[in-house]
Length: 253
Image (cartoon, rainbow, N blue to C red):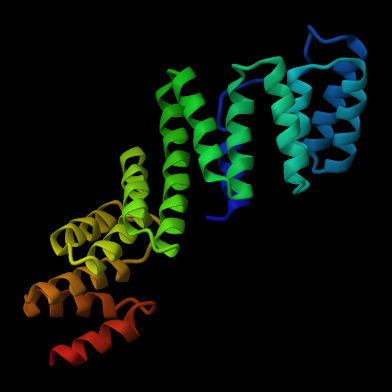
């Protein structure tokens, strides 16, 4: 999942009806706000931003800043989008839409710690179970990013810590796969097998080859060539892992 696609996944799932005409806005600002929403809906992002700016010149309203932030994000203007969402929160600090959207912008910017902090604020302020489930998925994705960054930087223990937090928030298959790999490399073969099994159990994005391959490696290093062969054969059925799995099968023979 790309950073941008995640933002649009997380941005608008909250059941917040803010797109209609706001009766409590100044009439002139409300008209411009509504016109901006219509333009944004039709994909005319720049024109929508102009309408929101005109509305804000009349009245500083958290909903206008929020919609401006949405439009700026669609224009890929991340810093300006972040500022708009921050302005929205200055006016209404408990506005979950802006908290969630700001988390999405931070994720898109690669600031996963800040993204988590904002997503967790949504969790703490919303009792809706559906919202909580979706926010926890976003937190899981951010922790997985932090985990893989730590692994790439050579800090296996910190990587494992983050990846564990990822799967605690949501059974994210790719995080389990990363755990299977690092556990295998660290000689923690039973943990690697369990993580790979969970990657298969909760598989939604990854292919089957990865979990089977790392199970094969763990069993091989444990000395169980029978189970290693079984899993390498299953991994070889996946084009992504066929070459490496076939290589391991050749070594066993």
